[in-house]
Image (tube, rainbow, N blue to C red; front, side):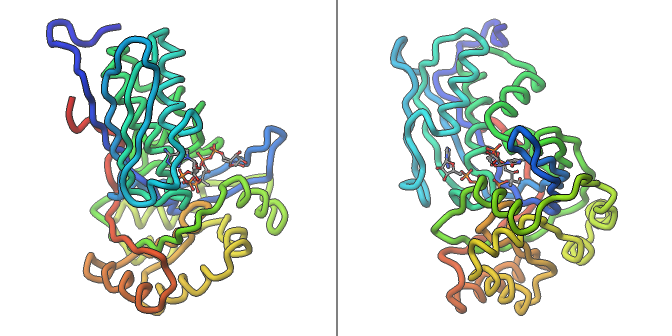
Length: 312
Ligand SMILES: C[C@@](CO)(OP(=O)(O)O)[C@H](O)COP(=O)(O)OP(=O)(O)OC[C@H]1O[C@@H](n2ccc(N)nc2=O)[C@H](O)[C@@H]1O
Ligand SMILES: Nc1ncnc2c1ncn2[C@@H]1O[C@H](COP(=O)(O)OP(=O)(O)O)[C@@H](O)[C@H]1O
């Protein structure tokens, strides 16, 4: 089980994990278990979470603190996904869950960019090193899938096709760097509510297929932002706009600013706009600010790597 034969075990481990945007999100009809089958293409972006796990005295259990933008909106108890990640690793390996977790938020909270999932992925990797439990990537990925549909992608990052609930991943080829601007709304949206609204206003078809994304996959392989912008797709967008109609204006402002494509990120309410360059991403962000259609704005690039250790 131990991966450190002679080196002293770490007392603290810091791990970074990325937020994501769904370049394409195709949603099937709701199944008996309450989940929808998905075919999605994830791209990890440079907006990221950092999780520091520090050894706590035996019997101390888990404790958690949060810093960064919107930290006040993140639970600091056992409902936090990072806390649940540490618990699930401890249960699986039989170790005592004694750890202090500190999360530094860089991804919008409840924004459809999987910040909580990134925290869970980072906490799994950090605690696995800290407790010297030495799990394989496959074991970590199984634990991740038990925590949330988006958590396995937080481990692998880069660009990947997600099927099943979004948790079964196949890496996808992508060339070069893409530039994004993100418009964030302070008030988040519940993913479950967006899926329920999807059932009411759209309803998924029985079959969802990756073949519908041929043009998008070609654009990724060619590193072609214009083709990628044209092919961006989100089946949840109508449901998100039904719950937050003002986002229509945010999409419009991005398009008027020359965005190559603009979509709701995942279940929203963050809007993602693909830009020609970093300068162009800054210009789109400035247009949102000038139009008063975003509570905050960010620029980022993708793809970014999955959960990785910064220090131990
Ligand atoms: C929509 C997506 C797209 O990547 O991302 P976000 O917008 O949340 O970031 C994901 O499917 C969200 O994944 P995640 O946020 O991990 O969801 P989970 O915790 O597994 O599920 C939360 C709720 O969303 C609904 N859900 C989730 C995934 C799925 N394939 N079908 C669903 O119907 C279920 O109602 C579930 O109770
Ligand atoms: N570590 C965490 N960071 C953020 N939110 C969390 C976390 N753990 C649990 N949550 C809860 O999950 C909700 C959605 O989380 P988040 O991952 O930020 O958004 P999304 O699912 O839209 O990508 C939050 O509103 C919050 O109540």
